[in-house]
Length: 316
Image (cartoon, rainbow, N blue to C red; front, side):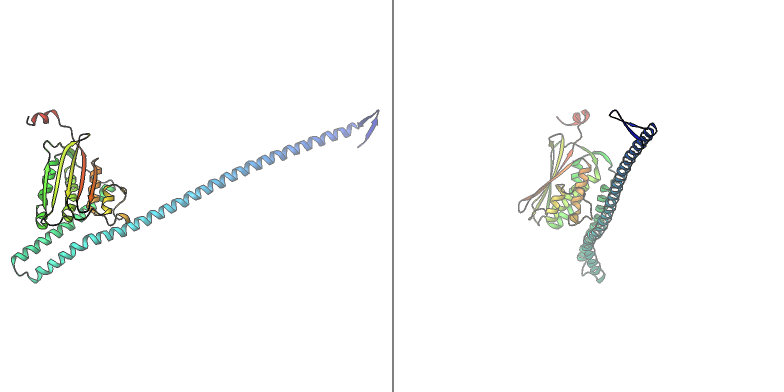
């Protein structure tokens, strides 16, 4: 490169000037390319980070799903085992009694009276077996959403009469008195007649089972409740209080549980069936129980408004 000094100025040969300008352009171009490459690398890096994060999230979700699926399988397996245990406990006692009475009949009872008593015991225990199976089918159908209520206008007075009639023999055998007190003009409700009978019958069963000989079980029906609702109560004088598991079921502490769940395993199946039937009828169930005093089961159900024709039929 040729440089000349002239009058205090530095002169660069034109050819060299052009070379310097060309070099500057090349350097600027190279710098711009480096900047663009750097930006591209940053963009690629961000994309890789996002993809890595997304992949990590997907892996976490997949892991969570697998863990959830594994837990579901474990719960179902546990439920199946508990259900089998429940069935074993529910069926073992009646089967043992049936076997014993069949043995007595086979060996020949001394007289017709004992033979008749054994046959009656067999009838009762076979009925219990059928009820256990029906209750299991009933509660599973409601929990799985496959139960179909036959909704119609129902007279609760008729339901109470049927329940008291069906329990005449069991109350007589246990020496328990079953009373009913029904308010006049008790309104009807819309519901499944058979299901409502089952719900009330199960509460009466429970009360009779724990009421000592000479005790009283009372069914109360009252229609004058706030919001046009009907109230059915079953009152007994059992010696002890309702067990904690039964209280929890009726209070809805674990309404989402199913038969076979570990914490529901020792609950009286009849109470679970009752609660689910009443819930399916948009009703409520409450219980008050105090040892040595009384236990009160209360069902509250929405009543059907009386039509003008119905009111005109009522005596003045």
